[in-house]
Every structure is written in structure tokens, then in C-alpha cells.
Image 1 (cartoon, one colour):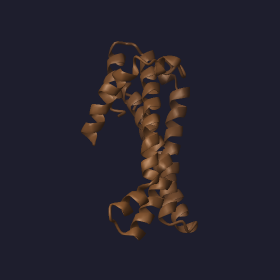
Image 2: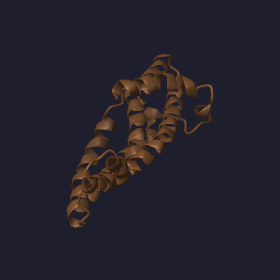
Image 3: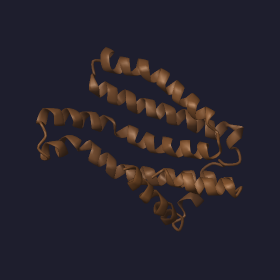
Length: 182
């Protein structure tokens, strides 16, 4: 669904309506977080769903435990996609590469600790993935907030992002793009 930002932010940037990039990103973040709630409920019930579909109960329970612990990463992933598209539109790619590199370097020892040292096994891997996504989101959010590169495009949170007449416009682009990616 964040793919709608490619169009909306691209048009705003091309029209030199820089402030609108931040508004579009906020709207996308709100909508993606809202959509993530029912998805999180489904993910949290993965084990039961798999058992209902006739899968092996032991494997289904393990998959369900893993999916449940991955729920926080669902929200982080949505935010990360919005931040990436916001920055890509402005041709600001170094912070994304830096953030990904730092996250990867931190993820390796974190995953090793969570899987092997803590004894959590696959549950530790899910927790490590969620933490890593949130680290990536945090780094990019700090960049957007404090970087002079984003001073014209990010002016803080605005009520305008939640204007009811703009949400359907976003959804008209977001839903087909989500279906296409799916």
C-alpha cells in the first residue's frame, strides 16, 4: 500500500509542493498502521488457522508462535516503507543505505544472542527481526526529523494528513498497488 507514495510524493515533489511530501507520508503511515491491526490479529492466530486448514498441529503451533512474535515487525515494516518512499522521492538514498547497513550489523549479533545464547530458538529469531525493523525505522525517523535535507518536506505532524477527503484518494492508489505486489 505504501507504493501509492511513489505517485503522490513524486507529483508533489515535481510540482515543488515540498510540504505535501510530509503530509502524504503521514497519511500513508496512519492508513498502513490502521490496516496492520486486522493483519496483526490474523498473524496472531496463524497457528489456529493452520491447524484448521489441516496442517500438522506441532508445526502449526511453532509457526503460530513465530508469527505472533513477528507482529511488531508488521507495524515497523509499514512505517519503513513509508520512510523509504519519502526519501527516495527526494533522491536521498545514502541514509537508507546507512540505516540498512547499521541495522544489518546490529542484527547479526542480536539474532545470534536471541537464538542461541537466550535459548529462544526460532522465537528469538522472530524477536530479533522485530527489533531490527524498529532500529531501522528509528534511524530513518531521526534522519527525517533532524536532517537539513528534509527541512522543506518534513514540518512535523499535521491534522491535514488525516483530512477525510484525502484518504480515499490515497486508497484509490494504494489498494491496486497492494494487489499488484501481492
